[in-house]
Amino acid sequence: MRAKAFAPAKINLALHVTGQREDGYHLLDSLVMFADIGDHLEVALAPDMSLEVTGPRSAGVPRDDRNLCWRAAELAGVTARITLDKHLPAAAGIGGGSSDAAAVLRALSDLTGTTPSQAGQLGADLPVCLHASACRMEGIGEQITPMELPALPAVLVNPGVETPTPAIFKALRHKDNPPMSALPDRPGAGALIDWLATQRNDLEPPACAQQPIIDEVLAALSPARLARMSGSGATCFGLCDTEQAARELAAQIAQARPDWWVTACTLR
Ligand code: C5P
Image (cartoon, rainbow, N blue to C red; front, side):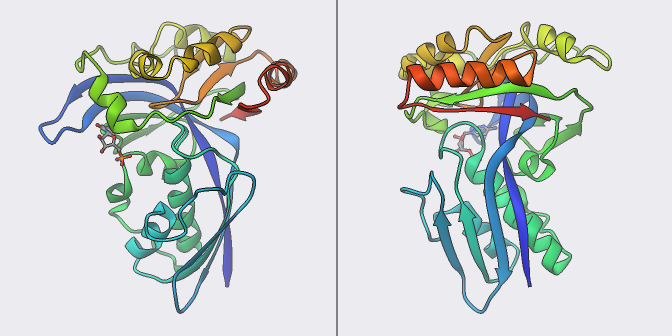
């Protein structure tokens, strides 16, 4: 028996760092949505563990227990044959590895009827990626509040540089920033974007300081209603009024910067 699962790109529309715990982990207040683009997985229970990685972004992806997919199956207490069709850039602030691991857990839950309760062991982004739809994320990532939000047309751009998460958190000067302000009640897309413009990603300034090309990405996305970095970078998103506007902006950026990863999508 095989199960298929989709691992959507995770976008932090706002990411406020509100404190730091004694163990070093940071307290977050983040609004998260998921794209209709991502990685595709197939999982089958098997006598031995194996991981095959295919697809346009498969280069350099580990095929052993360094990969969170592998560790997700181990956490679930099974051996499985996993196929990962990789479309998302790795280590890019859009939850690639965590979303893949969450997809493995979803597929295994389809096959075995159980989901391990310790998924958070695999990373702070695991709970939100298991949820995989619009929510507010607090604590170090373990507190998830589902949100009803309108779909948002978007452009995602990654310039191909890495901004390692621990280093970006470490470079953050102020760790006790204000949380997100109150969200408008049942906002339409326009009101949601207007509100988001008054929020922040606190990791954006330290990431831009380490990789100034992120400022160029944000400038390229400036025709959008709002441009911001996701997670600890380096992927940035631009929010547009219509899917056509998103497709046009994506085409324009892809033409100007053929070396960048650029895609139009819809966030939900
Ligand atoms: O949990 P995960 O492996 O995704 O986190 C990678 C690193 O990011 C952690 O080792 C930590 O340095 C940092 N981090 C943090 N606070 C969070 C999430 C991640 O400091 N809430």
